[in-house]
Length: 70
Image 1 (cartoon, rainbow, N blue to C red):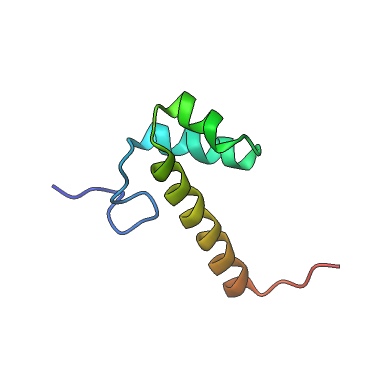
Image 2: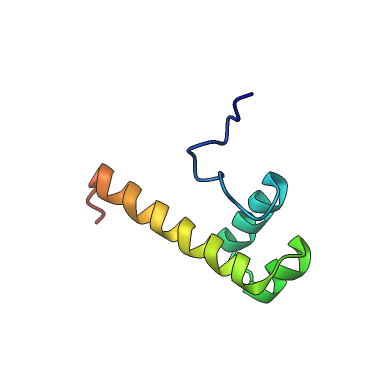
Protein backbone atom coordinates (compact mmCIF):
# COMPACT_ATOMS: atom_id res chain seq x y z
CA UNK A 1 0.00 0.00 0.00
CA UNK A 2 1.38 3.42 -1.01
CA UNK A 3 0.56 6.65 0.80
CA UNK A 4 -0.01 9.84 -1.17
CA UNK A 5 1.63 11.72 1.70
CA UNK A 6 4.91 9.80 1.49
CA UNK A 7 7.80 12.03 0.55
CA UNK A 8 5.74 15.20 0.95
CA UNK A 9 5.61 17.97 3.52
CA UNK A 10 2.89 15.98 5.29
CA UNK A 11 4.84 12.74 5.78
CA UNK A 12 6.25 11.72 9.17
CA UNK A 13 4.13 14.17 11.14
CA UNK A 14 3.01 13.48 14.70
CA UNK A 15 -0.42 14.81 13.81
CA UNK A 16 -3.18 13.48 11.58
CA UNK A 17 -3.53 15.34 8.28
CA UNK A 18 -6.60 17.30 9.40
CA UNK A 19 -4.74 18.63 12.45
CA UNK A 20 -1.70 19.56 10.34
CA UNK A 21 -3.98 21.56 8.04
CA UNK A 22 -5.67 23.21 11.04
CA UNK A 23 -2.24 24.13 12.42
CA UNK A 24 -1.13 25.60 9.09
CA UNK A 25 -4.38 27.57 8.88
CA UNK A 26 -3.69 28.97 12.34
CA UNK A 27 -0.12 29.91 11.40
CA UNK A 28 -1.32 31.69 8.26
CA UNK A 29 -3.85 33.63 10.32
CA UNK A 30 -1.15 34.51 12.88
CA UNK A 31 -2.74 32.74 15.81
CA UNK A 32 -0.50 32.27 18.83
CA UNK A 33 1.21 28.92 19.20
CA UNK A 34 -0.78 28.41 22.40
CA UNK A 35 -4.07 28.83 20.51
CA UNK A 36 -2.97 26.39 17.83
CA UNK A 37 -1.86 23.89 20.49
CA UNK A 38 -5.27 24.19 22.12
CA UNK A 39 -7.47 23.63 19.09
CA UNK A 40 -5.27 20.91 17.55
CA UNK A 41 -4.68 19.32 20.98
CA UNK A 42 -0.96 19.11 20.23
CA UNK A 43 2.22 19.72 22.17
CA UNK A 44 4.20 22.92 22.02
CA UNK A 45 7.12 21.15 20.31
CA UNK A 46 4.87 19.64 17.63
CA UNK A 47 3.50 23.07 16.69
CA UNK A 48 6.96 24.64 16.74
CA UNK A 49 8.31 21.94 14.40
CA UNK A 50 5.31 22.39 12.11
CA UNK A 51 5.89 26.16 12.00
CA UNK A 52 9.62 25.75 11.39
CA UNK A 53 9.07 23.27 8.56
CA UNK A 54 6.38 25.46 7.01
CA UNK A 55 8.63 28.54 7.01
CA UNK A 56 11.51 26.50 5.55
CA UNK A 57 9.19 25.22 2.83
CA UNK A 58 8.08 28.77 1.95
CA UNK A 59 11.69 29.97 1.94
CA UNK A 60 12.76 27.16 -0.39
CA UNK A 61 9.85 27.88 -2.72
CA UNK A 62 10.77 31.57 -2.89
CA UNK A 63 14.35 30.66 -3.80
CA UNK A 64 13.15 28.31 -6.54
CA UNK A 65 10.83 30.91 -8.07
CA UNK A 66 13.25 33.82 -7.57
CA UNK A 67 10.58 36.49 -7.88
CA UNK A 68 11.40 40.14 -7.38
CA UNK A 69 8.78 42.06 -5.43
CA UNK A 70 8.51 45.84 -5.66
